[in-house]
Length: 213
Image (cartoon, rainbow, N blue to C red):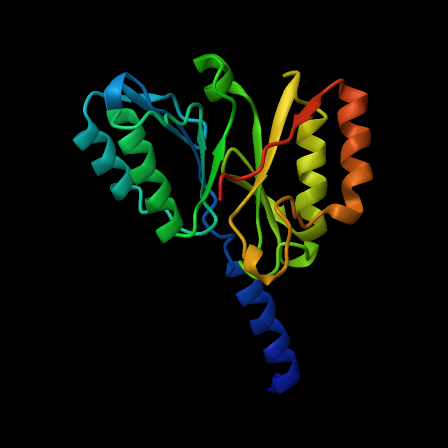
């Protein structure tokens, strides 16, 4: 009986491990805070928005989501009026995101519910200390994995080319700006021209928003 060479066994094992690797958490959580913190709406990764009628219920659900690095939150409104219960809740959410290394974005105050919960969101994840390397990045559509590296980026381009919506967001996870990175880093900078061509061909506008922190 032939013995399997050790090097061959290692190669097979390596392929098995690679095949078992899963992409990181990258949920897209859309939130509208209104009415003093009551009647808040939350949509997770493209699901139908769910209404939360009290501050306690809203906070409990956010905690239950166990958000972590890779996830991102898109707010339709960030209330700031001092003493307003909505502002207190938004401040709590911002601090909770910071403590869990979750990116928090604001998508314009004047957008309607249908726009906030309907605009296609493509998102990517990258290591906290390296948002620029394509080979270590993963790409998603509304939190659904598309793949890693160049393959994932190309799959993102393919899906964008099929989008019928006039606008899209392409958002990334939180990364370490204290390491000298700017506020608009991404792992596909060298491939930006390919993205621009797909957008132009489809008559689609990429809305650029930076995280609040």
